[in-house]
Image (cartoon, rainbow, N blue to C red):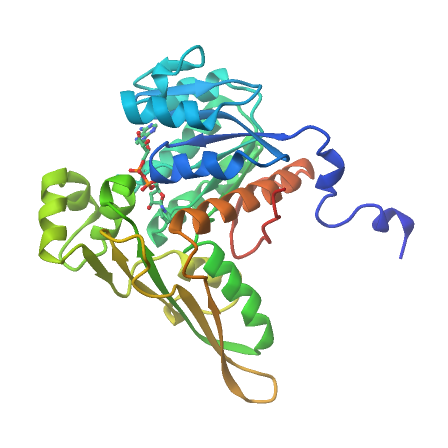
Length: 346
Ligand code: NAD
């Protein structure tokens, strides 16, 4: 093997660059955004420097304090009130990315309400002239399609965008891509998730977006529901949301990765909004035929003790680290969680 190749590992040798921690931002500071800063707090390879919510933002290139930010957000409703580091704004994302030039990448923990919102945020980044890595955890196939349509524009802007990098799509889609390697043909990918949260208010966007998957509801209807209407719906179901045959981007991501046609991918699950215990174990089953003609099923099951937040934020930052390695090698444009291996953040 030529010496040159041996000294340039395919992961881009990111470790060699990590004398300085990567500077990362989190857009959206609700359930997932707050969990994200807790996940980052003990990490040496990433420093959390920027965050935005709907009414303000906070930035400190030397690092933000998770406890102080969560206290400000929960007691005063926005990071904008954070002493010395916060700014109130009704256009927080645009202002933050205009001001915080020294950010290597962002995790977009934003609601995708309306269904075009995340694509509009990507366009805002393109307009800003900022270059770096964006990671989202969006869920709908039609939302990922909008991001894919921006690939050339993102490439031209010098942005590496990893889409569908939460739990599902994300961790489970990547597990399916890995498991598929045993087969000559993949017949079916079946994702079943169980989510338990103590109260729905901690994850308002997640719950509204899940309601939008129920029969008889659209994204616009779910977005327009008042908190009282969401509560009334949850009262009728004893706090449970049962979802079947969801429009979930795991399908287009696995199709694009060449693993199987999208109609072979099925996603459903149960969300309990009144109990942190999972109503069922989240798993993905990958059924296929081996080269010998045997039909078999691999199953990857998440530990019941792992929360939705752990299974979304961990992969999101793993993909952010992988994305930064790709960005440093000049790989720009859109990639999905099914085509890139996340890198563990230390
Ligand atoms: P949330 O409702 O708890 O919080 C949303 C946050 O975004 C709030 O801080 C709000 O102030 C902020 N925000 C809203 N509009 C904004 C704007 N215009 N500018 C700046 N900030 C704005 O949301 P959540 O429950 O944490 O969910 C976030 C997203 O994560 C949802 O889209 C959800 O579907 C997705 N999600 C994905 C997965 C997965 O596995 N892929 C799992 C769970 C949630």
